[in-house]
Amino acid sequence: MKKREECSMFIQELMQYQIQYKQNVFLKEYTTLHIGGRAHIMIFPKSVQEIEQCLKLCQKYDMIYVVLGKGSNILASDQGYHGVIINLTMFCEMKRLDGQRICVQSGATLKNVCDFCLQQELTGLEFACGIPGTIGGAVYMNAGAYGGEMQEVVEKVVYLDDKGVKTLSHSEMQFSYRHSYFSQQKGIILEVICCLKIGNKELMKKQMNDLMRRRHEKQPMSDYSAGSTFKRPNGHYASALIKQCGLQGFQIGGAQVSLKHAGFLINCGHATSQEFLQLIKYVQKTVYKQTGYQLECEIKMLE
Ligand SMILES: Cc1cc2nc3c(=O)[nH]c(=O)nc-3n(C[C@H](O)[C@H](O)[C@H](O)COP(=O)(O)OP(=O)(O)OC[C@H]3O[C@@H](n4cnc5c(N)ncnc54)[C@H](O)[C@@H]3O)c2cc1C
Image (cartoon, rainbow, N blue to C red; front, side, top):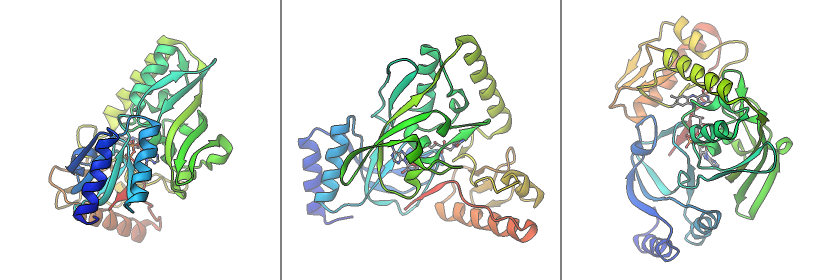
């Protein structure tokens, strides 16, 4: 972190612009894995103007920053983060545009977006109703489930980088499996425009309930996790390979290969980020040795 003096000037400016922030927060409280040390400053902007202001202040005081949604795909270090966390969960409005399009601010949760779509009778996003992240995080990751992927509904993305607000069309988003333009380029996703279809409320509701039931049956929903730890390797499933190697239930400290779903590494309640990383590496090494498959991490490190 910067010198104390610069830090307090940064805070003073946030107060001047009436941008909400917290100091000395524990990242474990903001990640679904429930792991992570202290972040000195976490900002909660509510508008594009406030997000722009945050970026300008980070530049002015030469502070590094990272964007956080619901923290459902993140392993945060026990050492915390020595920069500014821009938490977008209060930037979450959504509206229907003409016809079958919606425009959603990036901090809206997929659950709320799906509820909005249901109310508007617009179909296409039901697959995402149980993914516990924001739409910004989902676009960043090109999240997917049960045969659907974000790239099928995203028409346009408005984002902010050091040079200002810009727009990317679907074809410029470079979507592929758990990958988007933002996997390589820095930028804050601001708004997502989705193109949906006219749906039937009852059918949509039934499908969403069905998918939620399947999740609860198969996934360790009541444990601390970040979802599937590894990407699906070509031609196989990570969970099947991990199971085949006899790793289900294997534990290092408080980090464990879930007994319910071998693709989920979980925090039993007291895992450190080091233990979690050690478990990731152990699983990768064992699976490679026994099957020849290289498992690539899906979750992102925050350090
Ligand atoms: C129980 C459980 C089940 C899950 N099931 C699925 C599933 O079925 N399918 C699936 O794909 N994923 C799944 N996940 C993983 C996760 O929910 C998704 O990847 C989700 O899209 C992440 O969104 P988030 O808001 O939590 O992002 P975060 O975890 O907060 O961030 C993830 C990455 O996106 C970046 N980011 C977030 N918001 C923005 C933004 N506005 N602009 C720029 N960058 C941004 C962050 O910097 C970070 O690098 C699951 C997770 C859990 C815990």
